[in-house]
Image (tube, rainbow, N blue to C red; front, top):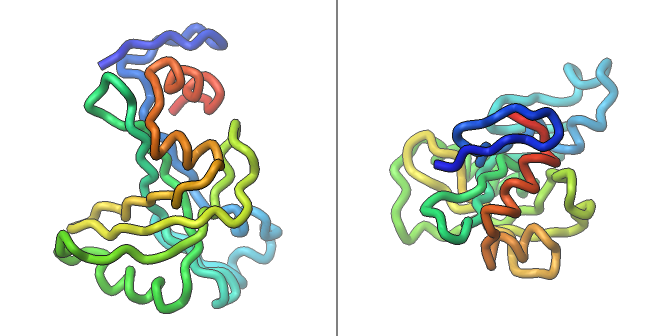
Amino acid sequence: MTTWTCGCCGRTFNPLPMDYGFAAPRNWLGLPDAERASRAKLTDDVCTIDNTERYVRGCLEIPVSGSSGSLVWGVWVSVSEESFHYILARWTSQIAPDEPPRFGWLSTWINGYPEPSEIRCNIFLRSGTLRPRIVLQPTEYPLAVEQHRGITLDRVKEIAAGAGHP
């Protein structure tokens, strides 16, 4: 575990924050507060808006070189109605190792990265109550590049400084 002192606030963290999450998908955050209760349903893991938009929360893991751990972003992905029901039906099930992934679109804008536009991803279900693993399809989008190539511990510290603290 790495101890880290934030250059902005001077607080020391042991260990260095390696996990960040978003409470809701971007489109839910864009709804006026007065309309959220009538148009949307949000839990810690799933969200629907107007019965036409469906989102699932998952873990986008980025390998960290020289470490056995990963930096994890808790992100939301948009899925089809069919995939939404498929995922929900298996949320707490034992998942076979050869279970094919489902398709989705990244629906979380992470500060420090360009606004995502049509970033495709694969959603890999996991057994028990683990959130799905999200793997961005290879593109030049910086987050996808980092997920496929990995990042350094210095980059993790940079992200921690820019993302705020847990």
